[in-house]
Length: 187
Image (cartoon, rainbow, N blue to C red; front, side, top):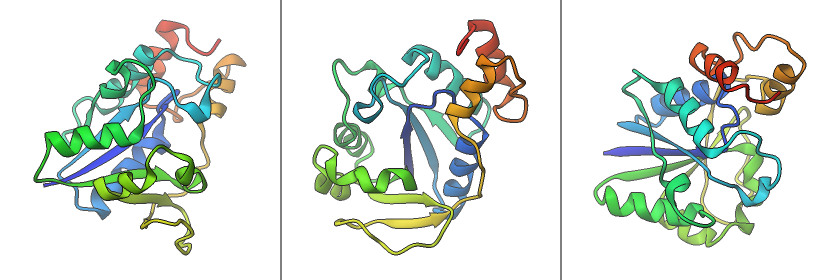
């Protein structure tokens, strides 16, 4: 079995996340892709706007009915800070016979060396960099780069649009837009 693990703040989850997940699912020939929202990311301290519970619900709504994807709240449910190495160790234990692919964006490659136990992360899972360009491996541990579609979109832009009272239709799935409106997020 081939499992993809795609973590992030997802504040909010948007079509760029969904397209990258879809591309990875197909290119890597995954059996399932698991989205893992972070409770708190040390590198984004103080910049996350929606609560972990809100982000979890938006992610669940985004992938509802799509059998390729599932959402796991392991990092939200874990007490204290949650580290990628702990999450991957848990998935390796749960799915002992699976090949794990850990998906990250190009923007995180330069930070990997500063993460807790980066060498262990590389032992637990194949590190897959979702990239728009074919670039050489510039990390001190093994990485595989796969192409994804170029989508000029960020969660920061979506939050700013909501604050400004502008439409986010087409930026996020309808279920996410409805949740943001109902919960009055990002205002």
